[in-house]
Image 1: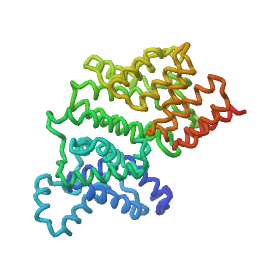
Image 2 (image 1 turned 90 degrees about the horizontal axis):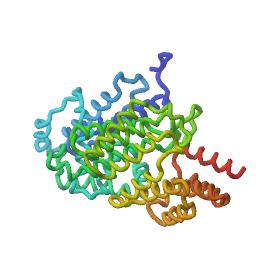
Image 3 (image 1 turned 135 degrees about the vertical axis):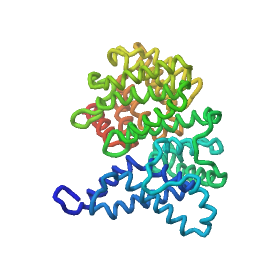
Image 4 (image 1 turned 120 degrees about the vertical axis):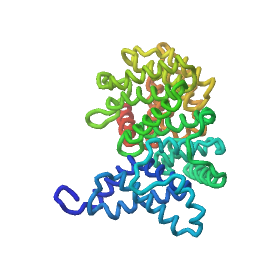
Length: 414
């Protein structure tokens, strides 16, 4: 019911269901997977539950939307069991892990699903794509965007992974302790990508706090699961330091504010302190790519100002990352940081960025032409900078970023 006591409009219901999808997709799906042991069937039941919500919620929104969706999705799964001729074969699964429609989902279910999808029997790229689809509830198009691949490639990876899980009978469980290290790196990657998907979201909002919050929650679970490993500690520290700056990234009128221009008094001091503490603890435990990324974030948040950031040390961190994790994204971040070192050779920095333009993975990545535009502006090559800004505008899926880049272009061209 709406505030006047009447039935909700289709637009109002769609808005509520969309919010429930963002907040509850992964927990509803994980709960149904625990019942069905079948990813395809669980996904279908979960999607059908949201369709039912669109049909029935105009008469009144349930007090606990996530609980309602879980109950309906489980009931649909149970109905599917009853319709199947092989119910007797399925029945032992229900006895092994009985779930009544009103039961509470297990708090570790999302992490169970991450580890299931990150099984070493699956190709790494399929592990990542499938987990982003199931844990985040991202569309295939959104999965493709965060992985910098085509939509058809993302769809193929997800389909292959589901088929392999079904064919190989991969169990839905958190691996034994001795199995965790072999899956940890890809699990960390997935959690980081979940955060990335929320940090700069497609559409009207700059960020999706449901996704960033989910990533932080998963990172905390990983730390509890593997407290002596440096990389989970580092990832949690990295996410917390980034999350601490969240409110300062957007002005009062909803516009993007770059780190260089942020009011640091608006940063969340509590999250910042915990993030730095986690990152420091990770450094004492060992090294890895997330330890190095957390170190870079620490250099940013502990610097008195943007101008007094130790850019030379930032570049050193990226140099170390390139030795163990030589990806185009790391190379781009290194080149951008190199251009900010006091007295840097900007022509050399631009040459680094131009060389990266040949990387297929960066062909649709808006931050590359945006970084080129920034260096070109400082070199006084206005026309080329304007072209680079135009390219970046055409590639970004974030409306907030598009407005920011358009304003930069307008300022440049007068």
